[in-house]
Image (tube, rainbow, N blue to C red; front, side):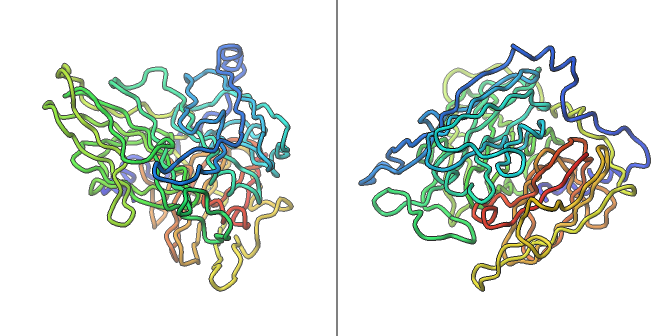
Length: 451
């Protein structure tokens, strides 16, 4: 639960649909494609070794890999523009890149081993499509059996598709949170296996040590886009002294709300868009904290300079017209997804009794079919799961409505069951996989097929 208002808001606005429109196709129309071609963003992403001193007091560089040698770059484009990027694999491992949260065409999903052959060392591969939705997304490795190491070495990049009419803000700031498993000398400690997921010992923001300072005018408004790039670190974010309003979850517009108890759950792959209003007086405004142990400050926000003229009240982003107003749960195809595994007792990670395999899908449905997945976590660990190619609703426990936000990455608490619902409107083969990269590599994944 993200907000105390979720249950009542979900019931009031989204009772089980006996009528209502079906979502528009996730893919752009031919007219949209024609309008976007030649007007987009083209970039080269060279994945290569980029050793650098992550910890300032370290004796050695950290053996990182980075796109174009940098950890802090962001890919930005306008909604409706074509995105084209060419992956050059200059690492020693096979790679493919998944745009996490983007409901794009299946051939461009970047699920290495399912939707494409991984790109061999020394080879190149072009990804080209028009993102159907605006929002905050991630570009990250996705190779079946081989995602953990390239992710831990730094191959994650934020992707921002800007709205045609974004909310009025003074600054739009992307913040990529990551942790790193460092030895005492500052080198990467990757020699020991981490079957439950590798937890880092050093936290960064956009590849630099925390905490970092953001300066804005008194009375100003900033937009924070927060994304979790950790291999396995589940945490909570806390907003100390800040008036923060969530306007999007996992890239999709949500009901605008203040986080319950000023905190938000933050699993690997999760993203939040927030608006923060600064006080009208100069001085410290507040902190964004990562609730690890006693808490780590990520960002300090300071009001500085001349007072800004008054801004309009914060308003929700327009809803995404490509997502359904209603999901006909009474017509849904339903499947159980039972998560098991315990590395401490040598019990392998499995879904419905087996490790992930490309030979058989979890479910095969026709395009436009409502789908309900019952995720049963029979492990002693919280399990974050990501569905490719679709956004879904988190259902209420009694199947009588859903929360007023969309997700593509959900946290399933240990020894608990949750249900998610979506309209399978994007044809192709789509992974449902752990976002803890070591668990994904070890087989905690399955897939659905939409025809």
